[in-house]
Image 1 (cartoon, rainbow, N blue to C red):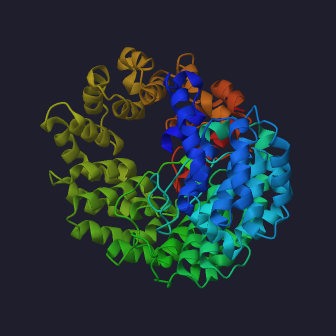
Image 2: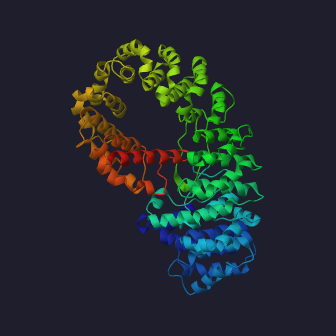
Image 3: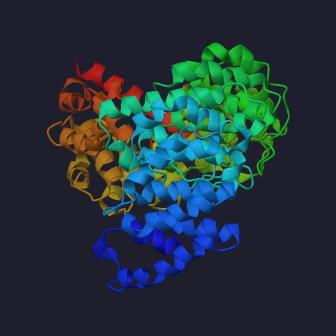
Length: 620
């Protein structure tokens, strides 16, 4: 099956010279299997004719003959899909008109799944055709008989898989991949049994015109709203939220229409539905704040998901409130910092963004906390206590990362950070946090200065010297280690980022910094450009480097290095007008800008859009 599928998709020049004759020899045997006494064999044979490259002339007659005598409903579904493909393969032969009439007639079949199969067979990438049959499609997908597809060879999935497969009709895309909602890997196992064929790739979708993209999002929204309507089957309701998540992970505009329907699922009798509804509201963050009261009612809902991960509905509610910057998240988060049972993972995970699938997973606890500097005062007591008792190096690193993200708002934790600074194992994350807090940590000066020279050159010396400068020390120690590092290190961008903090003090290393602006690594080029500007004010060299780094952003392609590039450009003010001209249409683009999947899809999109807004304002 895999070989035949690939051979039917790739260009002829990639096929082995003997493939065509080998398949021509095998085809009669495959067609003979359409009459096999075992239904599963007949289904597989029909599916092979669907994916192969043989013309309609060779396939339509045997497929139509089998259709006339076939009584097994799942096999009939495979036959309809095979006929839909075969009739489009030229030369189609003298049975093509008969086949087309048959497929159109099935749109009025009394069997809901035959109607759905006919829509798929006739769609041929035409989203408008599916949109015109929206009610028919929804009736079939939401009918109990949808389980028939689980027995087919072509689709082989249950409710959620059929929903996702059918959603591709409304984008004008064909189904191409598999994904696992619970892990972000490439096999869909959310219900333990379902597999589905996913929608078009991000690269393909990115090539759409804005007009087509807008129409696609609108059609998909109508389909998703239909799925979100009340249904007695919890799998239907779970799948509807999965589709809403997939749609929202691609487009921004559906949020207004979908938000009320998603929020209505917060009081669903099924815990998985409540969890997914809260998690989606978390992804939408500030735009979902109007539903904060309904989310807060779930803070005591400790029912766990029936997945391999232990998240509870309450955990998702906490995350949602945190994303809304709602203070009602503080007590629960403080309790989890203190050691209360938590469904938040112990480490952050970066998920694939392929297949237009949303993975309804939570961030690590420290990633949630890092986004709450406005509530630092109330969360700091729990963090300070934990810093004094924790022995797990990873936990200490994470808590220090939170304090670093909060910056000066974390000043109250300086005593605990000073204690950690004295330990040879825990000092690096403490130094990073103190550097972000700034001059309030100046009591660490002697310790940091000593560590900057204790082990000679290297990453530890660079960190200590830079942190010493950040808390109010002299620039010389940082220059003495960071300057040479730019000339000698293989991984330049951390040193360049820190050297930029020294501004004009780093002017003595301009030659080395300027050389780094032509490095092959984009992160190095971006940080070198910023450091050069910070040291000299040179925009003639730096602006072109940074504009080049964000060139593809204007076309809807986002990579993580683009966010600091845009932020650096915004600091350069009116000199960054070339970048502003390049990106001026980005704020009105509907497609989300992101590199990773799951919740990061939404936060990356928010961050880069906010940075571009700042750039457009600063450039004037």
